[in-house]
Picture 1: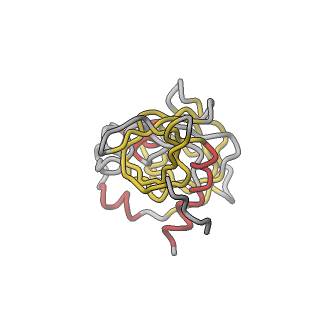
Picture 2: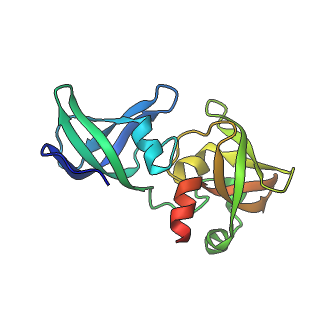
Length: 177
């Protein structure tokens, strides 16, 4: 653990925007004040490659000559939407049943944010799992990279196997402890 610097403090806020392609984004503190730079490396140290706009976040912030910068992320909390909310594919499914489905290790095959979907493969299976951008956002992520290791909750939907939740590999391992 690194020593806390004098001008470093912990605060809560929400993600204003984050662009994984650019490698950074900004957080707005609940208490107000200037935007806080959130660099992709800080987010990766938490175990995620992206974060959804609007997600609640707790982080350690350092005041620098160039403004406020996040130096560590402690927690990310997504919206209080039930799993699969807003997708017609899950309209007839029990949200509690979806939440109880096991987390399965997977690797992202491809994901196109502009198209709003992509596919992943659960380890040990060649069958594709459909990943919708809304499920990604509800899971607190903004984008996925080809080859990225994730964990998925998967249900049989109207169009085949579909992810109902996506967690970063690190977040899933922390939740299992």
